[in-house]
Length: 307
Length: 304
Ligand code: SF4
Image (cartoon, rainbow over all chains, first blue to last red; front, side):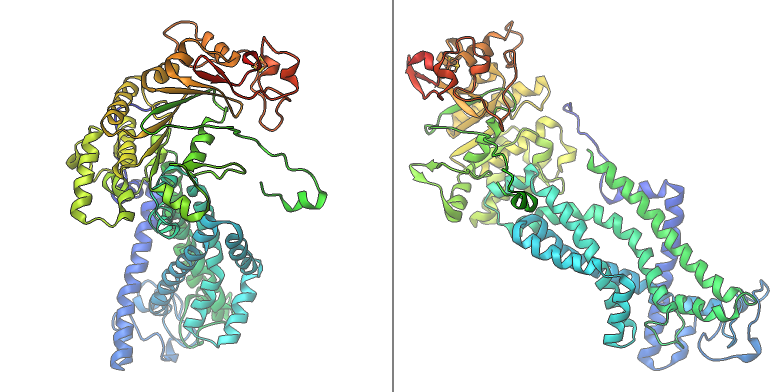
């Protein structure tokens, strides 16, 4: 039994960050994700300037070379350490793989952040009322959710992009459509376990209405485990986004993207192996980095919930 | 109770769990009624019924002579009742500050910030906590006793008329228990709420209660003035319960031998008859009503 000494002084974001930094694997993950998102932001701003000023070259000011125009004498150059531009080799059109990887980063970063954030928002709006109110509300909301979950996600994504036409937004919408039901389920489970806790009952007794209880008590207390899960999902979103691009769904082909880069490289495999392996390895590194952090966060949440 | 799909197809009977069946329980304003019984006797369920956290399957609840029925009446009653739960760690939102927690009952009352502030300070001083030190703390920064004080502050801040205290001290350290108990007694003297004090500790009941009700297997079997019930128990169950306290040091309620019947499968007649040394023919067939004995009431055929 507890005594008159406070149980733990460790808590909050500062504690979480310290925890992650002291774990080497999680720290490695943090650094990689930091670089990924940081670069995504910088390069994203550059590309925004390019489209705003109609001077396309702004988009590759910071890159070793222009990732879009042809430069045929560099065609299928092998990776070399002596030339930064060809560090990861070049494709048939002579475009630097490094430049293309860096050029495509903002798209992958935006995709993962936007998709996960929207999926969480929708999942919350469906899952929390379903779990908290229960009864028929729960029945109806969860049947809808299950219908989405039951669809094979690739089929759903393809059908959706056929319907709306190709484009970045379409791909994002399709991904959100695939992801929100999972979050609705998480939030529902959280709401169900929280609604019978004494602190929720106490505020019911204080005359607080259901909407306020959901906003004030259920949501803030269910977000931790969901965030831990979301960290794992960032990687999965990038993977699926690349898979769609690899299958040719989504972006226009002349626009470099990690998935479509390795897809185009398949015709030159295995002679020009770098065209497939370099973008593939990049995706893998990012996915693993996210899951390193996500795993640690889940440990943390599980430990925190037992206090 | 809701039937599952499979049950309705197979036409199986869902057993109805009769958690509590209370023929009649009246609590006078301003008094402290202690509800005593073993764990599993339905004390907590009865407390939760009275504050509308649980819906009665049948029967009625009256507050100031008015029947509590329908959403509006329930919401109206909720403004006048409060509950202090057994486990203070679970009864405070881990995400909220002490101030947020304690003043939550005021948010539905349309008070100004100033007024809320003032009420927060006086509520905290009533429970013996310094409001400027504790206002911004979270539940995890508090000890068990402090948490329970915060829970009490929340319960009294909106000046309720009726407070259910569900074993408010049993999750605390022995040394802290008496402090919190004294605090509750003092608050009652100062503010005069009506308390329903649920406990399995006879010493606590003796210390705080005006009236004692004893519960067995979901039913109240004896009710009367505290002194009388505690010193001269009438019902055979109460007698067995209290005599099994071997010395004055052991004050916890210890059950008589035998088992508490499962609430799904209750014995016919008096619920205590399988364990009762005085069981008669009539006990096995008919549930005893309350009989008056020496100014208290006992549900036992011995007092017919
Ligand atoms: S009614 Fe009969 S069985 Fe029940 S307590 Fe009284 S004597 Fe015992």
